[in-house]
Image (cartoon, rainbow, N blue to C red; front, top):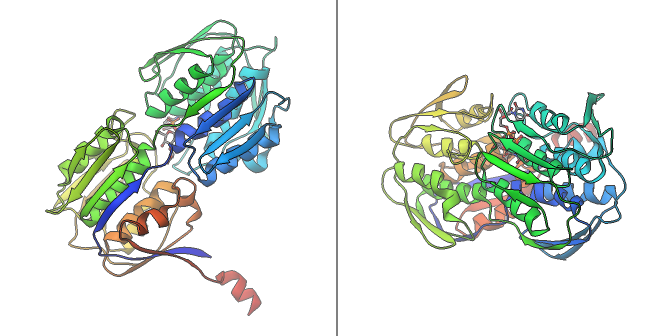
Length: 430
Ligand code: EPZ
């Protein structure tokens, strides 16, 4: 078993470079299916979810070439296969973008139901509502989503999203890009990665307006040509390092960011006692004084991001006073709380609300990552705790954080990767 072993209690100092945005890359890479030619995509994060998406593209017949550590050339012009296997699709949530992309390109798609972090239900009814409105016949059975347009082409339509769903917004955008006629998405999500997907598609010849607002208009075009596109920096990776130095104290220069995308995170960290200096493409974050309590409610962008909820909880565990954290997006995103309690945190959860009573310090413990952002939060708690913290199930963390151990070591963290014989295997061998 591979673990992270952290000796906590050290403030963080130095510079950290932010990678490309995971949740933009996971939509932009499947979008290459719409391009008739080679698209060069830069600033691609080196994370396991991206490797999975590239494997699915290759399984479909795309030609994927690595140009350098963060740049890939993808040529889908010879792809004819519309089926994504269960083996790969169910490993991540973002595999559902292949439904929208394949429907747009071929008018047909067969993709296994997606997997992803477990926050209670993760339905795709709004995605299906959009595809159906655009003329596709969609059946979900035996763990498969089978979608087909009777006349072979998606037709433009107007779709109102009951919830401002990130995935549904991006998936309908993909399906509409090569459709016949125009599509309007109302109550669209506005996250930075949605704007990034629209910018990528437009750079390849699409006609999409209004991304970043709650009404997006997509005029279907006949084809997209190739081009070059660079993915935006990861808002949540940046926020995670900002929360880390807020919890441990110290000073970090966080480089390759878009400060505007961090405003909601910056505002909350300042309330908690951090100082944040914004520059063109970086922020300096320092905390030397008291860590103060505050209340946080997660909401769709531009609200405080749900993907920063566990990380900010780690900070609030050490704040002076009692804080109230409300999860406004997912039904059950507090599965990490028991692990924090092992470290001495005082948290009470009732439905979507967590009441966090700050404690003078956390103590290192053996804990388990249950999902991507919970794992990142446990790292933050371990960095701030007194003593040794061992984090297992780190594969969750490596889905979304490029070189996290190297980046943390570079800013003074005492964190190591330790491989131990698997207890089960050892028992069997014994
Ligand atoms: C994306 O998930 C992100 N994942 C999530 O980040 C993020 O938490 C979420 O957006 C919200 O920002 C990727 O981009 C790969 P939603 P997604 O559709 O698209 C409900 C991370 O840590 N809903 O915006 O699945 C849903 O249940 C991950 O990087 C429906 O009811 O989220 C939820 O309550 C974790 N029906 C709400 O909408 C649907 O058809 C928001 O979900 C779709 C969603």
